Length: 453
Image 1 (spheres, rainbow, N blue to C red):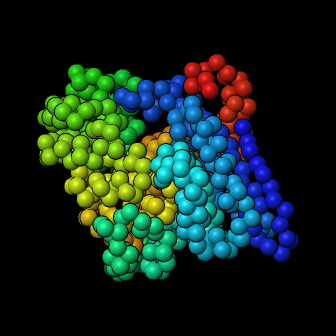
Image 2: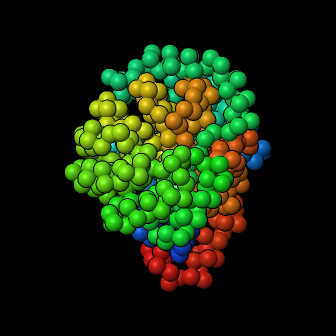
């Protein structure tokens, strides 16, 4: 389904003239790709937005938010509701200060009532804001990580909303972090272009895979240069013990194995389950309980050490991240490029993590999340923290072929993107095939389980 609205503008003005949205769904449930204890049959989907302009350079801003099938139409409708805030904006002004759009969208008093700053509406804001950054990077002729890494620290601080986090991170402290991060940035950017950024892979570990497939993919991951893999857990303890035993035998003692419960447990259950898995040396336990339960994460962390606690994939905004860090509730912070309010809010979260000296290991996979989040981690390395120690970006080998600038992973590392933009643009032929419900794939498979609206 496609929605569009256009606004005539003066021929001499460069403005946003249309906001087009698409409901795109991929049938990943057919092979149980992406299956976990809470989501047994996901159909990876994108609520996709294109900001069109009247510029003759052909530049457009592309963004999206990720869902797993049913309800993707609700997310598209939320993006549609933002159209009036975007159409007619001068392109040069928007690209010079994307923070203005971020503040206007978040600050709409009536839309804010639907959040505030959480859930479907906030994710819609993130999709639109990310599209604006994609457009800005294209017009600057730089990949987004480079645009951010070379930006003036004072300007980057101006892009951050410090409301509700200034008790933990002031603008002055953020500026100091960014100024320090610029020291040696050029050398790090050069190293990044040669070596890339460390990755780990979840591809062997989906809960719906049998042990033979898990073992084969785990061995392949090591052969491909990955030094960390991840397994989904939480449905059945005996199954988890068997699968973790098989994975450890396949990769040996020198490879990290993280485990991910996808919010499955109560606090005591998380502790009991994680301790049972401990003999196989899990590197971290991810999302052991509700992402909103700050004190629950803190309690779990205290009781399962030395197993690390990681979360962030479903953390709804910078305020909850602030509290997780203040409470000492996590060892690993996992940003998501499309869960919060876009690049601007992720800048705030990266700065919070740097201030508290907690490593960031982003959530990725899904539809296009690898493509997006690589830029944020690469900026963090080049111009903020200056390190990749204990930092890895999740990688899942799904659906990259649908993107015009897909991720490239070599020897267990993300290759630094060189194409201008945020790597968000989906191929037109993929949109035509997987647009729901009238794309060519869904028209020929109307009765598939994942296709039910």
